[in-house]
Length: 127
Length: 236
Image (cartoon, helix red, strand yellow):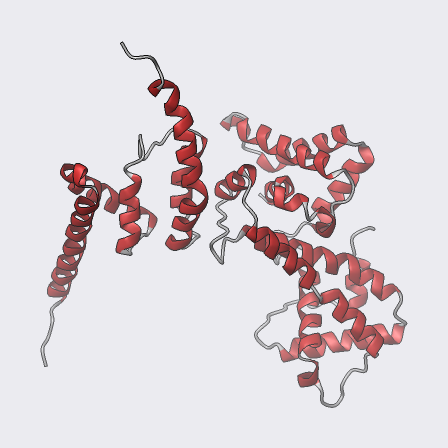
């Protein structure tokens, strides 16, 4: 019978976690090649948040990484932008339900709001 | 917290469609909703140092707004709803929930409860009880609002109150249907029982106790007889 010591179990878990983190960064680089330089930083920040809000699933953590594409993240401006962290931090709800509420209801409103917040500036005459 | 939850519920667009089922018929729906939203907005915007007594503040804000929108009678009736009918969880008006569960069990597991000595409750009374407990129309109404778009006000309230319509344990529509079911039972049982002869009431008591014994997992520390329950019924 093979005996696995406690520190070996911890090392295995750490190696697994590191692999998961590397895969997340690689996926971000693949899907957003223009932000490849940022992938590691975005991944680390998302993992820190994931720890706080009890997200463990890789896809859920990746969804957090994608939120970093929002201007100002994690302090996104506007009525709905300010409510984003409230949805994520509601640990009474499952991670899947929190992300579903974000995707279906909150993010469309955030994007709409950002368009109205940003458009007057982008429409400003140049020169 | 209880009053905050009640006013938040009243303020929702989805609730406005259910005011009658929730027991809120004392003011025109738009006026009642506006009063609740006014209370929520003022309460949210008040300085932090004034929020040491949020329950008293919210209650006064809401009831004052109801009186302003209607009159003192409307204020008194909405206050009665807050105190006697609003149910945040099972511990609010507990004896009514115990009775609701017992009668529901007696209704659905009637055949299993048979055996000597079976309390004899007339078919007419059992039909009345079954009708009182039938919430298919409420379930249908809730299902239809689930399919509808969520208004901005409702979404913000859900988020601020840590509710999530895609989550089983924090589902805001569950609170809505729970409130409607409780109101129907708490207002309907006294009306039905008025028409029951004393002997029939004793049989219903015995039936509820039999159901309670049958539901061994449902803990009821102080189950009250029907007469005591009805004597504590909210004023109609």
